Image (cartoon, rainbow, N blue to C red; front, side, top):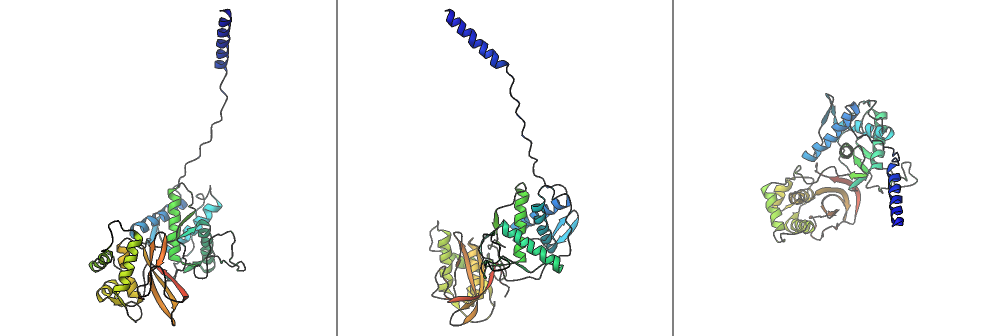
Length: 354
């Protein structure tokens, strides 16, 4: 009994001793300041560029101007500002809003039709590289270039940068300035909405490739009727691939190729006439595909058949890949061109200008 009482007293004493010991001091972790775009000129410009991309998402086009602190800046100015801010934020991540950027003259270059950059995404090292090229050109020429070129994949080339991992070729190294401005707006939209963090990469698409375009309406009754006829034999749960192949086969089998230059009919008249040249057949195929919710674009090049000729071909985006769908040749199959080779690759477009 005494032993039990002694044990109880010892435990009580131990508990009392433990209870009286002060808690160790734990230093408080410093609060990480929340990301804010200060009410500064630079911060407001970032907001304006990010807002330009919101307009692009809503309408399919970037605005011609943005407003910053009561001043209106044209597309050339806000493209230049985006390049300057990109470099400034990289160089001064904590203080980039303290000193205003100073914009020089920046007339937007003439529209450059060709756009040969092929990858669907562009990583941030390449976005930064191109910003440097734009700024270098602007400083030297007091204006903006029509296009930007990527570093060469040839180690002997002065433009070779081994730290940039994207592989480009002579056919895939040019992005026109309007497409690059969309990329910049997309990057800054991400930055503004993700606590000042850059994306690892962004889409390089200058368009959704789903909207109507010149000679390529998507809600015309003639286009809708042709689309529905092409898809008529498919099940209700048909895949995008099945729909794309059905549209391609309909265009190839129902229409005849005709020999003339450039656009004459557009999508609607081509469908009604059941024939056209490569431009008009492509207008009609793309109109049907876009109306079915399938991204579709124009591919343009000088193709080698029995002789080299200029050619325009539809490309449809299915399962994360672009597929050539040439309705001008009865022997063509989905995703397979019928030419022997492409002598010159001119570009890929949302809208055809000729």
